[in-house]
Length: 157
Image (cartoon, rainbow, N blue to C red):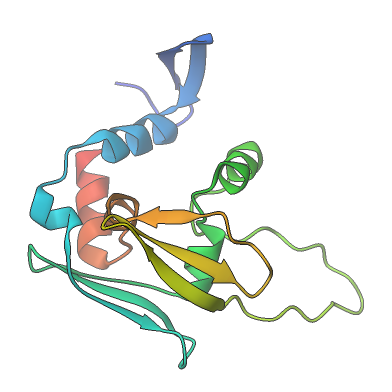
């Protein structure tokens, strides 16, 4: 069994790439098959006025919640995904800000609008001008941060 500092080999179209055990565990979690009810929302609530975030009740009875800050930092668009990979951040993890004597004010992430994309996703137009992320139901369910989901992803790894 590989230890925390060991690396695992992964085959890709680029040849062999070495990944950490944590990266391999995340890939296994992201590849597992979800039941149709697990990725079909029964009720979606976007708390735009309150500025608190997104809540989804899934058809399988589970409830997921995300803050707008987490959602913005987990944007699944190619640009944001690649930037996170290069910096080693997980979806939802904020970029580190340089410490300065007089920090610049930055408005909290909030959507100016939220629109459905077909029957499979939501699209946010963020207050920082970013608009290209499409948050599929599958992506959101796989990134549920509730205690139950965090524990089960740890157990599967």
